[in-house]
View 1 (cartoon, rainbow, N blue to C red):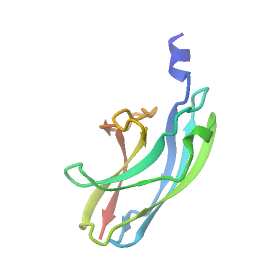
View 2 (cartoon, one colour; view 1 turned 45 degrees about the vertical axis):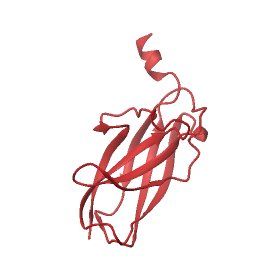
View 3 (cartoon, helix red, strand yellow; view 1 turned 180 degrees about the vertical axis):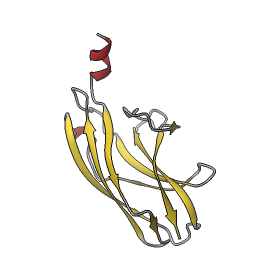
View 4 (cartoon, one colour; view 1 turned 120 degrees about the horizontal axis):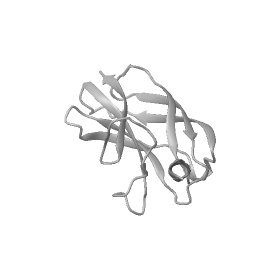
Length: 132
């Protein structure tokens, strides 16, 4: 019963992520991903997949939303591309790339991912990138 309870509903896992190790301010950072819904259901609310660049203090330097309707992600794998338009005013340095599934009606209640990645405030640290 415990195993079935863990699988009930939608459960999202980031299987693959590709992006350049560095990017220039004022340019774009392209992300290519493979996500999997390893649960047995789908989302019924319109959650938004949001990506963040976090500075050394883990504060959000910028964020962008993926153009995907997560309610369409039935069990199985899903490929997704996203682009972060990096502001020219962004400070140079190393940033943590983080992701969160945000409930637009109640942002304080993000969807929890099925992962062991470090999480804080519903944001999961998924990679690092150097901004020059």
